[in-house]
Image 1 (cartoon, rainbow, N blue to C red):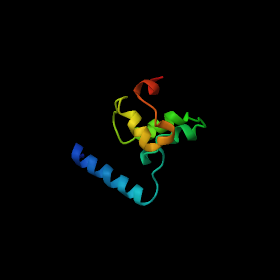
Image 2 (image 1 turned 90 degrees about the horizontal axis):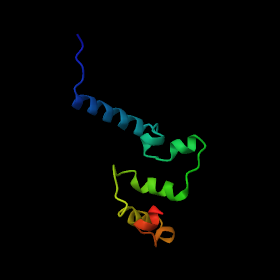
Image 3 (image 1 turned 45 degrees about the horizontal axis):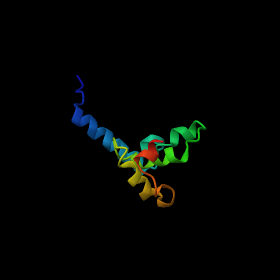
Length: 90
């Protein structure tokens, strides 16, 4: 009888598969960290500020509205230099 994988073994197998796909250049879209790839593939154009917000948030599972403007300034200070939480919400 074949032995199943436990959670740790399964995670290790997935990590190994991902590493192989990365090395082969086969990751695209969400898997590659491109948060707007699905929209592009569907022919939907996201507003620039939404696309930029998704870009700065992509490595964070959550971000407070008060922290997002500072991240946007780091992305493009000319566009987001005067943003604050209230302006962003508006």
